[in-house]
Length: 297
Image 1 (tube, rainbow, N blue to C red):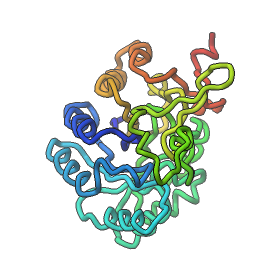
Image 2 (tube, rainbow, N blue to C red):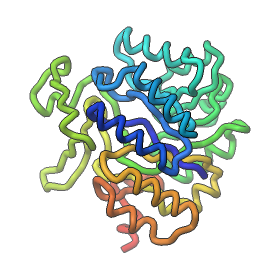
Image 3 (cartoon, rainbow, N blue to C red):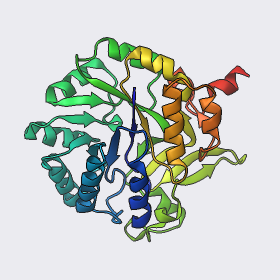
């Protein structure tokens, strides 16, 4: 199995983004996803900047994929997707069905993102016929559900699984971060910049529950399948996606790489660098905020 670095879900200052990807050139990830997938108001980097960065990473030996925005709300948003579909050099990850249509019309292969909500083999067949060469199951997909899907998956279609990071659970036209600060969405003052790993919400009992990240809702816990590598291999999963976090991402990638090489105690080493407690409930068919090791105790 290979490792990929998923698209940046958070809003970071330009210099931080560029420094992050400069370091990523040396990380043990073979594929790197670039682009804004959450909010079109995030303008620290625009499409020409992402394309320039893509060229630099490709020159460093990485496979680069350009990720489309998940929620298209305006004609300018759609124009960006059109430009992605016609970029002529890099593979594109389609994160909504409009992007699929444009990529199919352009006759170029693409990666079918998790937010396409692929729950049955009929949908996989449609995407494969449209040009998908790789797909990601929704983040709440269990091991058993994935196994059933893969039994009838189109031949040659690669499977990539979200294996590390705060889970992207939902998207809304409303900006939750702006609402938290009692600001209108169109005058949010870019407060997402103040929360490089999202803004954690707690229950009345003080337990971390969710993370808000602009229009995106994430898990509070950090999803980790580092203890499930034998099962993932047995299913034929080709790539594990690691979602970026603001600190220690190189260490995270290194620990996953070591785990793939057979190093023991990787889960314990990884826990020291997580921006939240580990969770893996969805993989086991349980509530998403559960963790298998805690259930076993």
